[in-house]
Length: 444
Image (tube, rainbow, N blue to C red; front, side, top):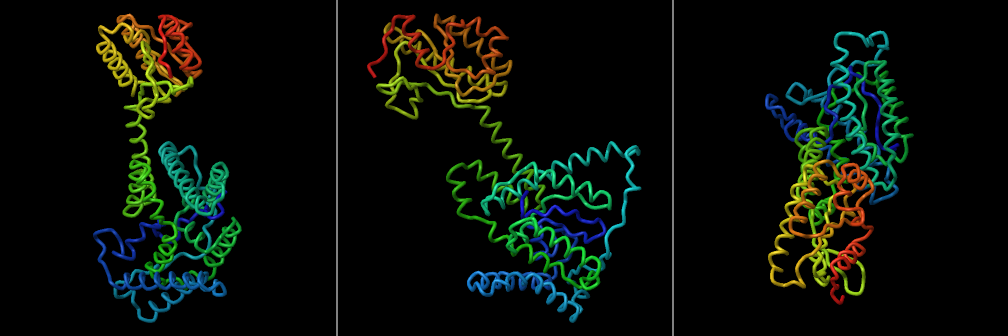
């Protein structure tokens, strides 16, 4: 389980404050993002002042090891000093947003209020499923981000069990849905937490605060809470990694940017939704136009590879080896694959007219990348076979996945092509085609 993630349920009677870290940027810059709320410079001044104070103490603590305690207590000092300042100046009367009254103590038991046969049970079940999906997605995403920074392994099953137990326990006292909160996890991380003991200490601290000190937080400004959370963010923003992603894969960078912008101007849920949407769009786009490559033999070997990637690879006369680079040959890409193969076959036939020794006699389909296939993919294979037969060409299939072979047998594609024309490797298929048509390979 992620040692930094906080899964403690949040009571419904507590502060109605948005717990998303980057969304709180509005608290500092604009007070709140809602257009109906008037911006006040006092919130900006308090937030920026204590943000600078926390970052400064953290810098001092890192530079001077003996003063490590200074960065640890700076958030607490910020709360105490800001609360005292607002109380002394009565800044809340002049537009500074404060926490105000919060109910002290723990929520009473709500076991008797649980009804599983009421008129709203079905609607509540739908909402519960949506909340569970969002909570799990957010928790795993947050956990993985911090696990990559700290270099430890995240167990998703334990994360789900922890959230499940915390939500079951929290539901018995009218608590919010628990998840791996980004903001509280970021604060935990910046404080140097290394294990789940930090969550136990935090729970005890929250319990004592709820019982004894809630009245003292009445004048605590909202902006200082935002500054504490934002102070944990600089270490989580890796510009070099973003630049590296841009160089490696533009679509991955677009996913990263979409998630960042969604969280910054919306919430973690919106950011995750944007990232998932872009990721699914990327998968669909790549599935629509899979790579289909013409293969050639490397000199002195039986290895066949893409002639576009390796221009030194030798083309085999009378045989056209083609590789289909998709793990799932399905309705999305079957037509595209079929059209590209038949186009290359027709080009080969037309360019070799009048040259008997170079005329294509067989086509070998390398399906080593094809793990699975659906009915549309099977239909495409049948149509390719019919097209080749009409041109007087032999079709051979090399190294298909076992699921694909099984479906090809059931649909009788293997019978139409011929069991003798299904091979383990492209080299075997090419040699069989050359032998059948008494051809000779290039000297390579």
